[in-house]
Amino acid sequence: MGDAFGVNAKVMDELGLTVLKRDENGNILKEIDWSKTRAVATSTNHIFLNIKGRDPHGIVDPADKYQLEEEIIDTLYNYRDPKSGRRIISLCMRNEDAIVFGCGQEGFGDLVYFVEDGFHHVHGEAWTTKRDHGGHHTSVSPIFVGAGPGFKKGEKTTRFIRQVDVAPTVATLLGVDMPAQCEGAPMYQIIED
Image (cartoon, rainbow, N blue to C red; front, side, top):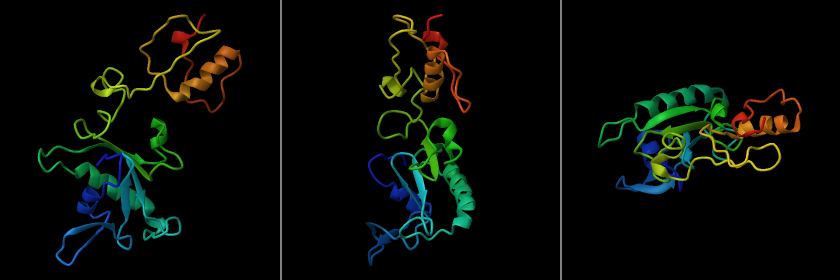
C-alpha cells in the first residue's frame, strides 16, 4: 500500500477488493478482473470504488457505496504487515471527509488513506508536517514565501501555513473582509502591523 507508481493490487487482492486474474496453475497475472473487482488503490493514497454507471466496468451499485466504504475502512484498519504484525494504515476516510486535509474533491479517490510510519515508499513518512516540517528531514513539507508590501522583512515563522490561509491573508493585506466561506486564517505572524 502507498505505492505512488502503480496500482496497489497485491494487498487489495489479498483483501478481496481488487481481483487479479490467475493462470491455469493459480499464479497471479498482472491483469485486473474487473468483473469481480470492487475497488482499486492507486496514486499513493487513493482508493476508487468500481461503481456502476460511473466506471467503465463498474460492478458496485451506487446505493451500496457508503456501506462498501465502511467495509474497506474497517478492513484497512485491521490489515497488518505480515512480517512485523504492525498496522499499515494510520488513517482512512471518505472523500467528502478528507476535505479537512485538502485531500477530498473531484479527481481524488472515493477513499483517501495514509500509511503508518515506516511503510511509505516514496518521500518519507505519510504526514509531511510530522517531524521537522518534513519526514526524515526531507523537502516534502509545504513552503510559503510572502514578499512585498505588507509582509515583514526577513521574518520566519514556525506556523504551518496551508493553502486555505492564502485567501484570508490576501484579504487582510488588501483591507477587505475575508470570504464568508473562508476556512483558513490570516498569517499574522508574517504580516506587518
